[in-house]
Figure: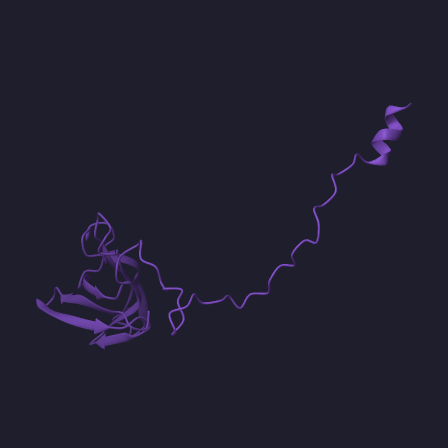
Length: 151
């Protein structure tokens, strides 16, 4: 999450002023009497069929009584803005982007080569299982079962 950066749009419907807010998860921005807080941002991987960009956003607005009220807390999606909307008479907030990285090579890539610096196969540091000295004897039926069969 630390390397992710979201760009959110904020519209003041009263004066028609729109601005971009760039935040990292866990950060907030105060613009006038509104605070926009980003908790998380996600993006589907490039190799996925459907692409979604989402952000978990919290919006707090100062009322005329100077008390802060949370007017929205939830996920907003760039590709589906009507799925979840900030319902406020003055402010509108939406997701514009979420910058994040993905592993190269896609879902079928392997994290490591399994080779040491010398090109030899790397040995595991896990404790080895003991090797059996001889084959285990065949299991026998319990003595209780044999005793009950003779009665």
